[in-house]
Length: 489
Image (tube, rainbow, N blue to C red; front, side, top):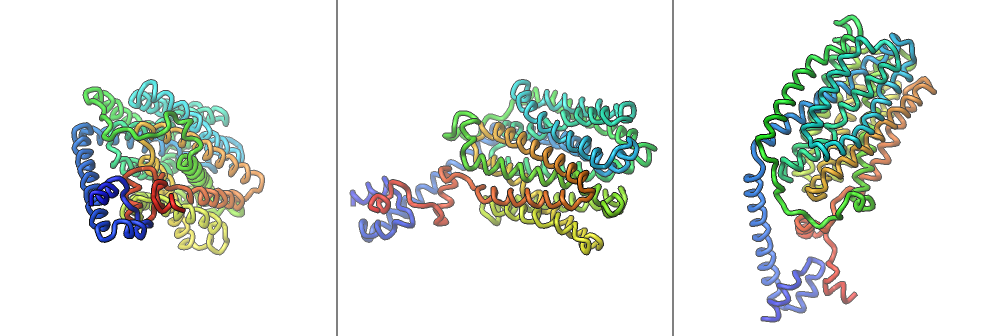
């Protein structure tokens, strides 16, 4: 019996080795295995209780105020980022350029500048902290957007304003990682990133609807978009107030000890979770930004290039995409946590399937000519996109240690923004060369297929102790290398 206890304490048997251990331990093995599993579960539960107690001590209520600041900046950035999209035909006519040139300069170069600014913002946040960079970004947004009535009458000065706006929009996409890692416990990281995705959809929806109305009310698109600076100014006051309040609240200490991971971000570059997540997020941002940039024009401009629905109707139809995205942001998190047991891969795969199919369907004349079928396509792609990007960011928060999440998310977002800029520019170039939206839409579907392949490899490492225990309970973990059945094979 002493030999049995010693063996059970040293090597906890897995499901594949039950026959071996049954022969070796006879009738006592099941009791010993059960006792060991119960003891392990009790110790795990005590660790969870200790983590919750530590979280309550170090993560105060002020973390929600910090998140509120991030969400307000997210809303403002998303609104400014998309404000030109429903006005592309009006802007192109006013400046005497083609729609393809306008899309390239005001959306494509804007996205490229955002990608560069994300890399710079990551360095600045590490150097000067989140609040200082967020404050500066809001000031830049207010000033650059307010200059449109004076500088928005030529192509290149308007491009310069869009580049400055990109520099103001970029920091918040990077800041969410360090802010959540610093102020939030790890079990709330997914909810925080999901809320940012939802607020981003609200901001895009608001920009798509409001910018055409403001342009019509103000008498020119320059003054209409500049009026948004009033709301940005109010938001800036709140952002500065939170930054001042944050000085009185100590940042949260890590709720869990650091895990054994590579020392630097460069050591992660060759790992499967890092590469799969980066490629998947890049494909997701590519498809999202390209679709959001091109589709309003496709809906608004006259046939044969577009559907001829007008800027106002196009803006209203695009809200369908965003409303579906708001709901899907919540549903995606529930599917990951409740239905798929924390696994992100099934949800990401579903999102890429929807994004791969829908753009091609929208170019089919029979579907595009029917408002109900067109609306259904917009709902489907609006549902698919939040199943990709926020879920992948949640995957990063759960897979990498808290000390590495900020660096991982920052590097992923920089590469993803570059991909989105390339996607918008290639879509604009295809639109200008062919004079039709079919090829740009087909390109979106092709990139979604590439993301679908990358999503097949989006699953956590089995070396994570808690995840390994859960997978072992479901019989999904292979035999350990020390297992007697493998030693004898």
